[in-house]
Image (cartoon, rainbow, N blue to C red; front, side, top):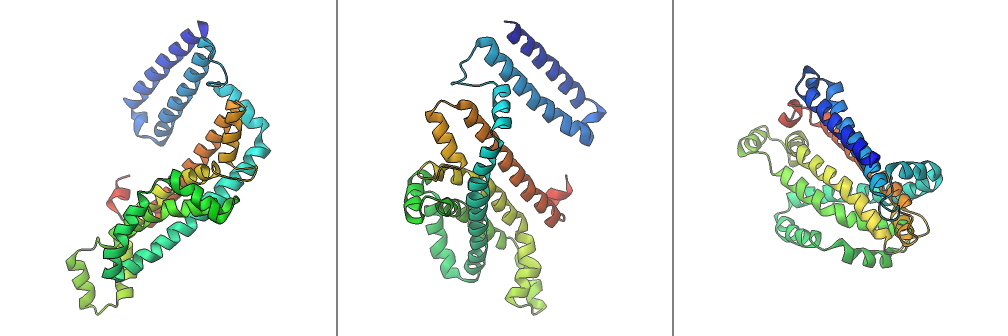
Length: 282
């Protein structure tokens, strides 16, 4: 009972502090903007710890954050091997190949009305295929190592990136295109000096969507066949052995990796599209 009462008091105090900061001059400072979500996250962990210990939830159902932290610190070599296998080899390689190919094909579609009418509907159809059905097929085609996971990631990120880039290349209006024609600009001059800069917010929107899809695709693909390493393999194996603390440790590493990857792409977007109104308002 003392655990439950303590976490409820901490939760009430944390909400009071957050409300006080949100209504003060600190809310507009960088420190205030970082402190509020940090305290919110700490509150969730404290309430989680207190409720699990207070209600005596079995560790095989929901381990406390302290047990997950201990498992994290004791399993760093295994977690690093899984991170390299899943994120670096599978997700990152597939992300670069899929997004790069989608960008080049979007330019080809932009030049060819035939491809625009024929390929985009097929692309939307393929994008709707469930990954749970296509992943085992790609694993059988490309083998059980990271190559098949990269192939699954390519299939997942290709069409969101393609659709966003094609849409971005259409965003220039008739007056802007007429102005480039009046300067006798070629297709490539118009593309690089007008249409690609205008399309950049759409391109980065596709890149940001693909960051989360890439990691999900790599982990899901490992459920259908993998060497004895990788986040998906470890999660599947530890669930069978009721090692839920290790499962949560892998989930924590995957969440941190995905968030940092998304943040890196968002940072590059801010530098490249600094002129766009959505960036100037921040």
